[in-house]
Structures are given as structure tokens and as C-alpha cells.
Image 1 (cartoon, rainbow, N blue to C red):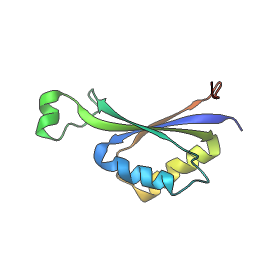
Image 2 (image 1 turned 120 degrees about the horizontal axis):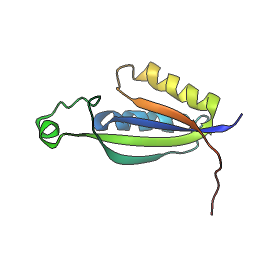
Image 3 (image 1 turned 180 degrees about the vertical axis):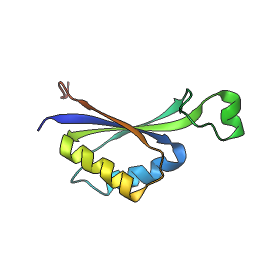
Image 4 (image 1 turned 90 degrees about the vertical axis):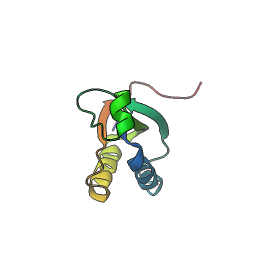
Length: 100
């Protein structure tokens, strides 16, 4: 089965919980990258006064790759353990990967 890239985007206050879940399952997740980001647009819920003024909300982006079945299992894990976490995701096929 080909590898896929799983990208997760979530509010900052959810990120540590998701990272802990990923770290607890080395059988599914070999590693991941996390970056600070900003959520913009009509689908981003702005709740804090600072967010309303700035027009965006702080987000964390986590990326990991692996077999599609494993990445879908990660999604199920997050859904079951953090049912109201407000995590947006997408899966895309990996065309090539390696180290240079």
C-alpha cells in the first residue's frame, strides 16, 4: 500500500492532546512535524477578542506520513479520543520521498 501524507489543522489548545496521542502510537506514527499557523476565512471560528480584532485564529498544523490504513487509524484514534476537538484534516498521496 502506498504512503499518504496526513495533515491535521487544529486550535492551539487541542494540539498537545493530539501530539500526545500520536506519540502514544509509534506503531502507527513513525514521527511528525508540527508548526504554528493562522486560520483565516469564513470557516474559522473566531472566539477570543484578539482573534476578532486580528481576523484570524492561532492554529497548529501537524503532518505525518505512512500507510493509508495507518493514517486512517490515526484519524479514528483522534475521533474516538477527542470527539469534539475541531481537527480539520486531509490525506494526499506521496509521489516520492527520501533524504538528500
